[in-house]
Amino acid sequence: MPDQSFKKASTLPPYIFGEINSLKQKARHAGEDIIDFGMGNPDRETPKPIVEKLIETVQNPATHRYSQSIGLPKLRLAMSDWYLRKYNVSLDHENEIVTCMGSKEGIAHLCMATLSEGDNVLVQSPTYPVHTYGVVIAGATVEPVTLIDDLESFLDQIKEKISRKKGKPKMLIINFPSNPTTITCNKAFFEELVNICKKNDIWIIHDLAYADIAFDGYKAPSILEIEGAKDIAVEFYTLSKSYNMPGWRVGFCSGNKHLVAALTKIKSYLDYGTFTPIQVAAIKALNECDDEVSKICNLYKERRDELCKGLNRIGWNIESPNATMFLWAKIPEKFQKIGSLEFSKLLISEAKVAVSPGSGFGMDGDGYVRFSLIENEYRIRQAIRGIKKVL
Ligand SMILES: Cc1ncc(COP(=O)(O)O)c(C=O)c1O
Image (cartoon, rainbow, N blue to C red; front, top):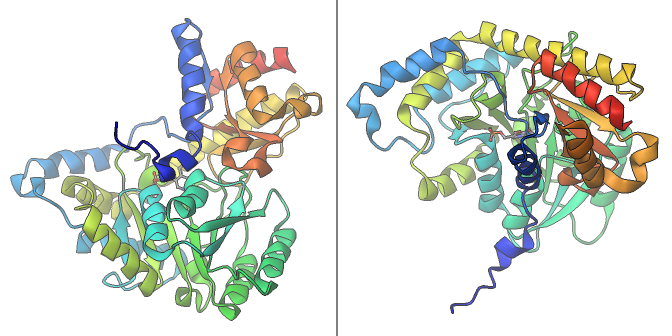
């Protein structure tokens, strides 16, 4: 038998959604109707004009060949136009933008391209798993920086970690609006962060997956809006959430040309890019479908309102988030001691409701569970009745 000690694979814990999914599947096989707030997997269809563009393009056999790993020039141009339109940020599509097969892929490969053993990386915690495990897979060391709701303390922790004599961090990975905590920030916060990191020669990777899912007049800033940010930062954007395109696998890394070049280079060894018809349909999305984005955002807002209202009515007090497709809910006091995994199991078995345990996003999240807003309002009301029985 060949050696089975696969060091990298075995140091990774089971993927969070894998564990939740198998619990859910078991209950469903037993004939139960589980209301699913587990994964942040948009449930609605991709807007028609985008699907139609894909169908039209795929009829052309020339599009069946290998595509371009860096992304079609017109797609990168569409992304730079998007930045100009939405944020007044200018980007050179030749050197400052690379297309990814989803931002998850891009973040993991950027880590692989830029980090190695001995590098320390500050990572917001709790957070979306690839922010942490991209670093782990690259062989570098993660230093979690706790952020539940206090941005000041987050900055203080970063300053404290930077001021140490040994093990100065090389990179900081952040995500605003944040999954899972739903915390948002303003431009002044980004300004301070860019200042700190510039002074200390630290790269910033910002994940802007929820750029367009913002409510009540809040506008999620881009870190690239900050003067000089491009000297040290890149930002990831994805079509998965804004355009209901999670299965299509299109995202971007934009900003600092050295980081973009590193990612482009490693990707040129690993893939031939997203299927050309998907890239062409993505151009359509970015250039012509702003109204579809507004509709999608509005749907999440309605679900957020329904779920918040329902949970508050049954005594589970939740603050209404101003962005993302999630609710981040502190576990009610009497269940705090069992922790988020056991509490999530209880919700599946007793309330027939699946959520993600906060611990799946790092131990800082253990006092919480995350609801994804991927069920309709009727199902949300059904879930509230189930949860009421448990509380
Ligand atoms: C913060 C964050 N980043 C990235 C992703 C993955 O996005 P993509 O589909 O572009 O890989 C998600 C998905 O839930 C996410 O929440």
